[in-house]
Amino acid sequence: MDADGHAHTTFSDGAALDDMVAAAEAAGLDALGLTDHCIVTEDPFGRRERYDLVETYADRRAVIDEARTATDLRLYDAAEVSYVEGDEDRLAAFLDRAEFAYTIGSVHFAGPYDYTSVSQYADLDGADRRAAVERYYDAVVSLVESALFDVLGHLDLPERMGALRRYTTREDYERVAAALADSRTVPELNAGRVHRSLGRVHPDPAVLDVFREAGVEFVLGTDSHAPAELRKRVPALRDAVRDAGLDPVPIAALAD
Image (cartoon, rainbow, N blue to C red; front, side, top):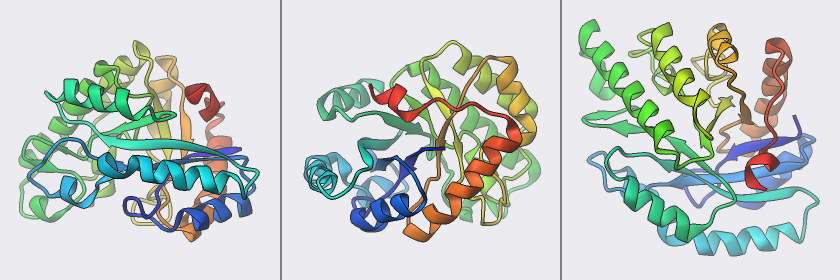
């Protein structure tokens, strides 16, 4: 692993950009993708109000350009963009204007469901939890089919929450793999919860055979929001790649 394709700074919910760059250097990386949250569509969960890269991406670009003068790392001016079904035209127009080096498309919310907060699922029964998870994968397949994004972020996000964990089925992974097999979008092996309650990468290593059988490859991202996370997650991601026998797609292949 020579590049981390997924890291956040204070331009969304992460740490100072210079500190993230220093952590990537300490981890022995050659490149770092700066992928702050970018939410184009208003949503009922207040995420658009919290993340304003839509307005500040040019300011961040100037900061990245300055940081390049002080490091040997290759820094990618990228973004993690929340996908919303039905808003593809507005998303496409913004992405054309912003001209990021590459984009990660992620489903963080769909319909009435917010997949970043556990509160709405705690009192649901099993059938309703399964319905929420199934709605998530409907949106993920639509994201892939939209062809808007270079990377599919944390493709089994509901697994991060105890209330929704294990409601994802093998058939859900098969649906996503089939969509990816016919798409330019590449999924990421994501280490965002490897040292927290999930204790593993996304997607579940136990189902990587589903993606192999479909001819789907992966890029690598730590999904770090702090320097200490990046320094710890890079070795864990390297171990996961070795254990799974993966040959990841280089970030440079997406950006060039």
